[in-house]
Length: 89
Image (tube, rainbow, N blue to C red; front, side):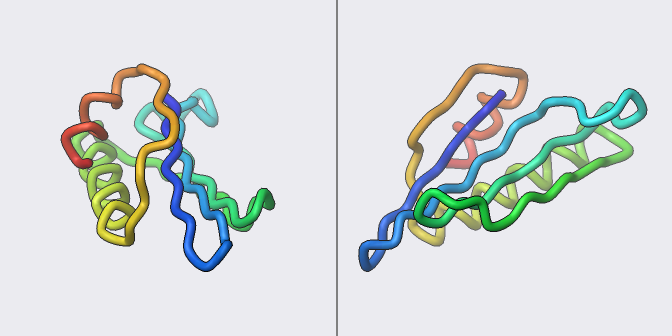
């Protein structure tokens, strides 16, 4: 799964991306987020959880916050978590 949200305010272009690529062999329930402002990556964060339900809960929370902040869907590539994100949006 790879999903990107975007927001433009006062000529500042912001993007927030999430992907569920496994970062290591030992982290089964993980994802990473990236924040980009005007084409430059400003923040990268890796998340790892003990269970799938914990991971899914954090993803819902993050996307709900971004939608509340005015972000809109820019791009979505199907994956296990795509339906979860669509429900959060």
